[in-house]
Length: 599
Image 1 (cartoon, one colour):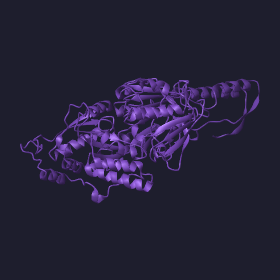
Image 2 (spheres, one colour):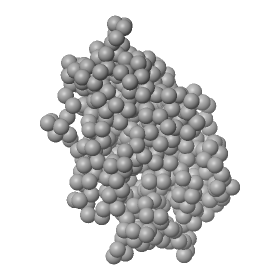
Image 3 (spheres, helix red, strand yellow):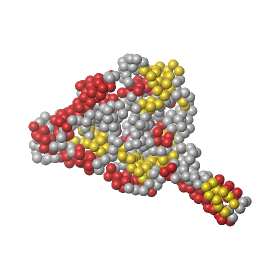
Image 4 (tube, one colour):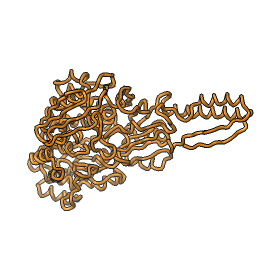
């Protein structure tokens, strides 16, 4: 903020100056209103992935989690600084000496967006709903058969049969209102997941108020949110199937931010006035997952040769991961290895060079030759020596996952060099869910992200996740045992060793190929809003991923109060003009303008 004092002669010229000021102030106000949606402050976001569901128990892809994270709180949240446990609906949890009982302190006077009270019983109900109904994406957060007691509305007592760190991970489980979901408790999973929640009832700062599939979805400020009142009134998401069109809309000022840019478009935004590019530190990976079959009700038999570890090793060895990093992600990625992402630096295992599968098409061909996979009819495709079946793979690739389709096109060529034919099937995330659920694929190219703690990501690779959260029903008892060991190990150093051992074992068994750890790319206009919060840290996600802190801190450029106005209101200048008419000399004081870099 800058201030200055000066004297002026106020005759007819003084009146003219005042009127000009009033006009300028009105123009500034009108410009702010236009960018903020009239009387409402509106953030407009372009996304590449539509919602797949508005049901918190069926979330599976990026936009689903963006909405769920904005709409629902967890008992404990993730800190924007380092993703450690932070206050959420609970201010904290205390454990007993044996780590078998945790007492969590719930905020008083909480309300749902429909005005109903939110108490410890809602949290206990949500946890029981997940456990009793075996909700796959959440059940791993409740080891050792916990029970939950609610002696009063602000206390939840978590009791487990064995020592556990589960409450402090924290459990990534969105808390739902019992009065909305109680009628569905005990129903089959399909029924629970099919419940529409638009408009929803949540506790977060914004509630999903409308959704037009394939086009847009809108979130509106929750009047009963327990935290500080956001400046934003509404968040409008537009779905773009063409990323160039999305970038152009950002440049034209039609939208304020974009999420999930293709790396090939980095140069189109990188030196553009009023646009900033956010290269998010990698916490996800592009994954080629093999299907081993066994999904309930599936009528498709995936390629039997994939059960042969030699075939899977040959495929891993034939893929040039460095080329994927350079050609697909324009260098905005690193080569992949294990199923715990680099962002979880304490837990991530960087595979030692002497234990890596080096890129070598000749070695891959030699492996297949030695195992008897020969091209007996000279059509360029090897046959399985046991079944005579040609090595042909049906591989869907997500068009909603940055780089998946492009990486798939390269993989078609890599595997052709070793006598494996690939039928690449580009598909939206909704269609990918269909392939996944029905088991109608030999492998697919999609993504994984996971939690700050590695427990969840290891869990989804366990045997009992076949037909639930598993990619392709890989089942291995040794990996299961490693998962269980780390799951109950309270010594962090010993647990770290077990987690890294599990990563090395999974890497060696090749149930899939971690292709790359890409940077997630976001961009935003610097002349519209200020207050973007990275999670974790300055190089983290700006849009809600782990928490919704950005929604609480964003303010339009030039705003000086939570009311959303910009600069000095025009009516004040008009009053000043009237005063000027009645006097000859006036001292004008404190002419104030908020610059964009000062908001």
